[in-house]
Length: 215
Ligand SMILES: Cc1cc2nc3c(=O)[nH]c(=O)nc-3n(C[C@H](O)[C@H](O)[C@H](O)COP(=O)(O)O)c2cc1C
Image 1: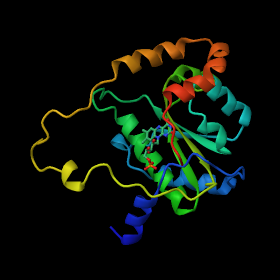
Image 2: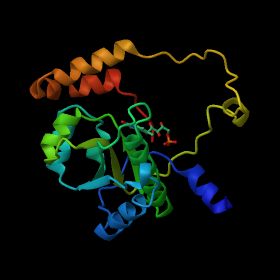
Image 3: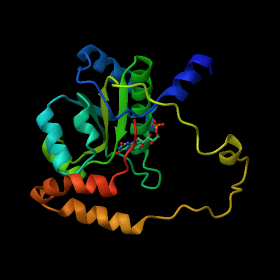
Image 4: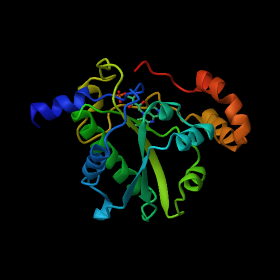
């Protein structure tokens, strides 16, 4: 891997503070053009991208319960994958979409743009209704796009290479990750609240439950 590529990958950050200046449509097209060159399961290339530049639509998303950062970025790209796989164990459509999203974020970074990959979103059925998406397509993520309002700080990795890399056998014993059952149920219940109530709870929910980042 060339040094420039490694530096690009290592210096990319998720950005949550943007200037109001919109990204030129031509550059947005380039981001999506790069995303569509990602590998995909069985080379289906069944990923679609919807640019969201309507602030009213972003407000609706947030009202239905999603990351407020969506409203701070002048544009965003909703990424969809076709629900076309029999491989329920490995969910290839999610993996293909993730590869496309990473391409997009890296290309954006290389062009001085800021992105934030977001999955704190309303339920897929709500997104389908807001955007007129048929059931055969799954909303996978929303990528907020804009220009950074400040330079992000570099971050270290949480684990050294030798803590995450093994050969031929899983060597780590039982680690400390637990399935967050309480949060799973709480999220399901929150999703079911009427929009009017979610709107009133928005600030409190964000303060109390949504992780805040300083970039
Ligand atoms: C699958 C996925 C989902 C994410 N969802 C959110 C999200 O909903 N809201 C958010 O602010 N950041 C989200 N992020 C960004 C992560 O918080 C971020 O990647 C992580 O904190 C590491 O920071 P970095 O991207 O600057 O290295 C998501 C990232 C990934 C890969």
